[in-house]
Image 1 (cartoon, helix red, strand yellow):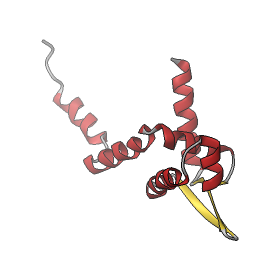
Image 2 (cartoon, rainbow, N blue to C red):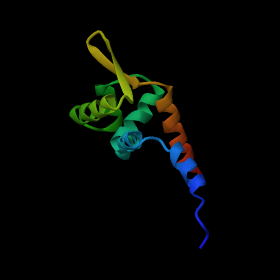
Image 3 (tube, helix red, strand yellow):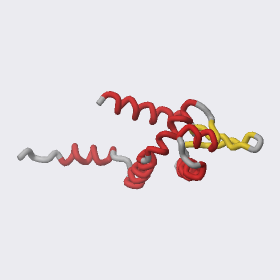
Image 4 (tube, helix red, strand yellow):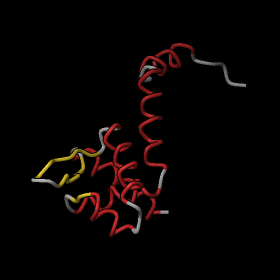
Length: 110
């Protein structure tokens, strides 16, 4: 068995993100584990939409869409704007679009 290079291993361990950050990252990626949320993100990548439009496009009840949007809002993946009586949702920022696109790209390479 090869002798461990403790200095090298110490340098590697120093580069690891803090445990709390890794936990938060794991929680962040859990949000992507639901196909309804993924479908909503896919729609919002194209255009701002209200609950009724998302509901119609995905053939989900408005309450199911609202529930998923609440989770996405809490994770800061989507934001909303009130225009008149309607509330329109969109991706929170470019990072979300990039994460989504890179995930799709990775899956398509398989």
